[in-house]
Length: 299
View 1 (tube, rainbow, N blue to C red):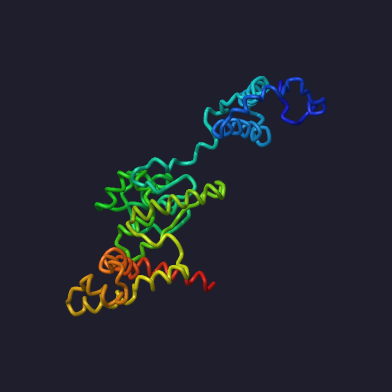
View 2 (tube, rainbow, N blue to C red):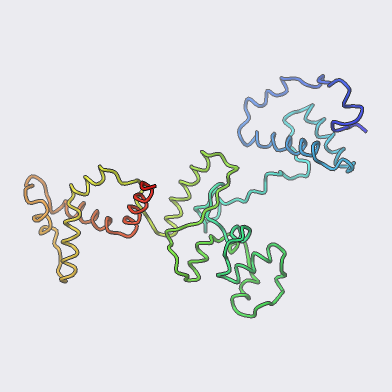
């Protein structure tokens, strides 16, 4: 037998390195990250089998021996043992136009991920059945229920399994704050990649749910700007005018809020700055963002 995998008499023989030539590795100077992934994947397969594989399988042992010989002769050899990259099982979340916010390392918790983790997805029988069918737990022809929802579940597809659990809960009209979101993070990715992907997910997810919040924390400079643009006084004027069923004209607000400024168009300032900033300041998202920042400072 031409292979011994670290045991038997051959393990006592002197290690023959006559095959090794450093110049064979010159190809690495022009290799990119994708190339390195291929070089490392095949070596992972070989090393894993040598350490943990079933040595009684003569056919695979011969395949391993042949692969090793090919690598000795040409280290750039990249074919896989089983014609499949063992690391190719990571799903592709970057090309789904319906879920543009998902990335490889950061994505919204899907219905199927929630099911695998034992999370609550019973808010939708069709989703639960889809997961159970996908796992082979039940047959798609097994009629436990006979209603429109289950009939739909018989046509389950990846769209339902990959649907964010937050979307599923929202679709059931359960009372829940859409500001909360469940996210899955792949810790096999680098910290740098996770942070980059999270920033992308955050931006795109806000667009998808049409809920926005301030991008940066509030600072003393922020508060000074609020005073500068007379936001709180304008909000009070706006509230009283609304209560009394009156219209708050820009020139009236300008005269009241900036009475001593004559060298600038304060009416235009109200229209372009104060009004829009004041309306933004009393939005739910802005106030919640302030509360969240305060809660974090208190810990």
